[in-house]
Image 1 (cartoon, rainbow, N blue to C red):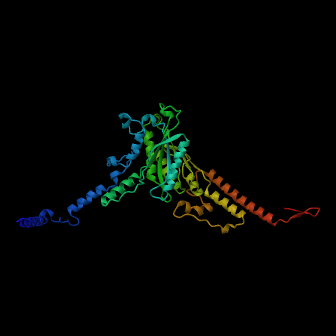
Image 2: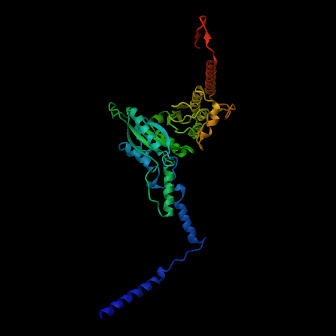
Image 3: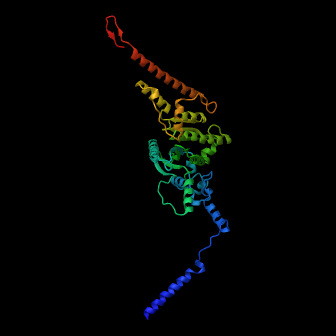
Length: 414
């Protein structure tokens, strides 16, 4: 009896499953053909989700369509958390979270360093950041906090195509925002009650690559952030025409000087449109590089920027080093036609190296604005060449000179 009831129960369950599988509610959904209304609606929704303007920054470093997912939000939060709690009236003025009484005392620096995500120079990036921290420490600052636009962590790739595209879109938009390192004054002798005597240092980090040059949008947003902080400051309101000094550390690569000149020319053009001459709202512009040494790139940069831009390199130029090496080789008996020069490919430095060894006499870009400096460089080149020729002639004379004989018949050394 029990066995019969068990068999009946199994049959009943099997029949019910067959009926469920064949019900209209679980039948396979018919896919509409291409060009149908449903297909067009799905494509429209997908285009809205993947629209580049969804999280694109505006001129005020805001992205109203993203909410808390705005790529500039980490930068804003880092600045806001550095300062003490502010009043609602001060926050409403929106200086990226900088209090009104401290906006004039801040010091700014734009550091151009190798891009750690899109190059194989992540170690160079780390050393550059360490050098900035050590330099700030020597100047009396202490590191407080930082934020970077590059994601150094590894993440699992999403299986959903839409999710992957949104992740790539967010990472791309986030890399348009510069990094920021904040340093506070570490001198204990200065009273904390006087903010004007304890200025903080904001170092904006901008990436660059050997082939692509400076990340232009990061650089532009760094200047926008500086101008936005100082725009409604008391010192700016009193004297609106007072320019802001711009300090730039870098670039790392000599070829990046071409993109830097382009970006500075943009600022100069904006300044002329607003009635400010020379380098626009930022002047003077002080550019200090510890690694750029291409004589050709440096000379071109100085000729194609305004007189308010001052460039200083902390290394001798490649042309000077090459001529010194040739002089050394000739002193040791090597002929110049036996010297080979190895240069890198796909960079402005490597392509202009041979051109730099044999400078053209044709003027580039019309009449250069700094003729005195160019004439000085030419005179130095001629002086080095004459010195090399003079040493070579003296060496040949010394070798061919015969020992002289004195009256007593003894030979005297030459």
